[in-house]
Image 1 (cartoon, helix red, strand yellow):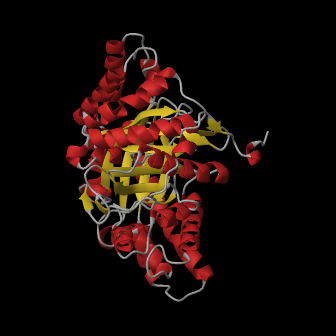
Image 2 (cartoon, one colour; image 1 turned 45 degrees about the vertical axis):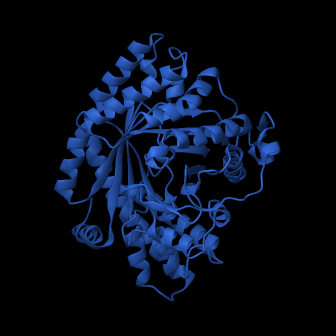
Image 3 (tube, one colour; image 1 turned 30 degrees about the vertical axis):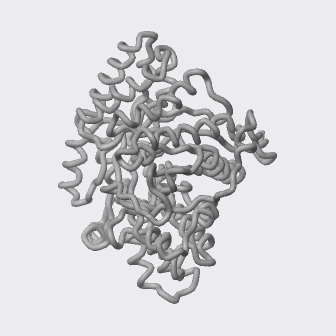
Length: 454
């Protein structure tokens, strides 16, 4: 039960500290939509998604009004489409037509994003996987709400370097295909190592094959709440600092649990997980970077940044798991540059570079996220950035990801405006030194020795 004191405290967090439920995401298995006939496959996909989600937005709006808790996004994730289209898709255009079906039904039910235009290729790719990957530029250029993710590695499998090379080329092609919108398509495309099956956040959400027929996953976020709590313990010891973060994360997760359970009851869909991720927005006061400054840094990127972020991420997880038995997804701290005003300020001040961000990803919840880079960055350099991030995930047994946007026609010193929750970003420099000979090698990097745990 939620006590009266918790209700009052939650209202305070909502009104003054930017607490919100970032997303209610319904995950849907499309395995029963597989058909050798492409038109039948698309029809089954449309009908099943519509049947399960037709009251999703209405329900979320009711919960928001009833409890006074903002629910920012309503989203859908589906089984990786490379699996669903493998029997019927013979060309890149065939796969792109499924993306159009997903986009159409997302608009029909009123959600803002639908994720799962995805392939799981941590060891190698099938012909269907490769077709889907090569179709991504067309799919993202011709849809509005479709998000794509590719899992390129895992601690158990190693890193699929053929896939890494292909994704460098695909990201560059997606940037070109959407250059009239400042390469916005790349903001809806992410590559993973150790991708979780139950992540409700975009662009990386997909409905894993280990999941049931349908599930509700809720993502809750409260960077402003954590920052406000830390303002009250300035100068205190690390013990007090950690306890404050844990207690705050507990309260925020309780809000997510309440919303998830209510949505599950009303929609008659099983509750999956609460993802407690400190996901910032461009709004002032809703910044992970500001939390790091409150911990004691002049700017993110200063010496001590990785240690401060490690502390924050760990205490968020510890607080969250005490509030709900089903904390999952990513859960921790996101460090997207364009979506966090404090991160933007740190880049502008010269405190934060891609190299420092890469170090920070070894202890955060995701990785290099929403980073704008020069449009003339080579595909092999993008692949090199991906390979580095995949290696951090593989060796450390954690989820890592890359979402970079090579903005065609723009270079270092310029900014790009994405709008809405995606914010804006300064173009960050990438090393001028090449890695072509490394990326052109065929095959995969094997799994690390500590992966053998049987």
